[in-house]
Image 1: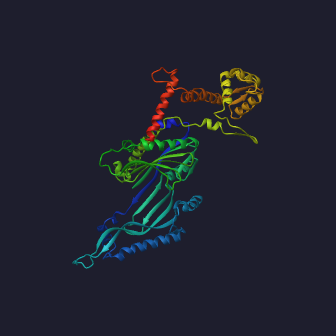
Image 2: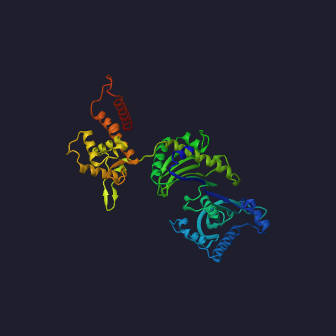
Image 3: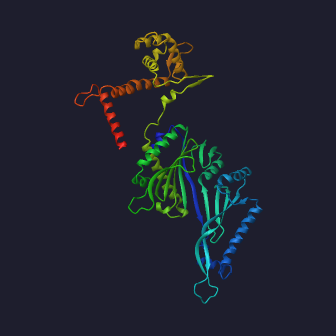
Length: 494
């Protein structure tokens, strides 16, 4: 994690980590086992025998209560349409609650899903008690209610309640909503999009998702970083490295999968997934400047923990360490300079008022000569007039008057000035290189003289024999690199 932050410190706006989503299952202990159901009806309510109709009556009563609750509080309740995105559909109702500064249930969806139930069966053989029934745990499809709630502390959340015994509930909590509420209470301004914070003015900041988020200042570096992470991650993320990231031990009897994959489903963006047992790590980019590393835990035993909420803090520490190791591994792969398309940018035209100044092409040898003279002259040449620069170029490269005219020089100087490489000395018609111009001119000249020229000469002119001494060390180095590249091409072709 420290390596990743050091590499991209100048590009990052801020970094934060939190629980992205927590799914908590709730139940009533008195209604978990068949013996508990018998005690609940026979001893508490005095209902016996416990028939199918008795069990169904509780479901009807609960459904009637939900309908009456929605009607009395004017809460919309409906079945979702096919293909409907529930979160998008209920968002206007949540916004209405926020404007009115109210808390509570603001929408109810009904859904037909599978869940735990109890069946009442008559015994196969007659018993002394003619009313005796066998209660059996089962799973079947019945109506579930999704209550969309705006809580004063947790923010927007969802509670799913089954309408059949044992009335199991599931709570879906989002850590970003909780953070947003805390920031609002402390009067800290921020900008949030969906489940991601994109900006803040105070940088101190059964299924579980924990995420680490990197907010970049610009879109340019984030896509290059993600591309390189995916390319190298698919090759370098071996089983040993995956188990190290998640902090588990690798053995022959490990359950689940150990592999990485790149996919693009309904998210609209690519996602790098890393699987270890039932743990899933994901990395993806969104909102132009947002890079997220998150881990989804579907089975807490894979981390050596049980499902109790008392282990939430221990789980958080484990996931913080895992995301740190994942970010550290990505930093090892990315410990290189981010690609900067200098020559590509110079080749693009620059708007100047109603006109456009042409770009500077890398193959323009005339421009290369001008930059070399300006670079060698340094600050002294910066005080020279156009005619003096023209005479120096002609003398240095032995050019005739027709080979490089004053008109061509003025045209080239105008292009360099438009791209911010050249500046005038006050109001005088004397020119010197800017700080940016010095760096670009050095890159331009070095590319032609130290890279392109020697490499082209070694490829198209004589190739020295191995028995004879090469005329220069640099030429031998180019031949060595050429042989290595050719060997790599041959291996890929095979």
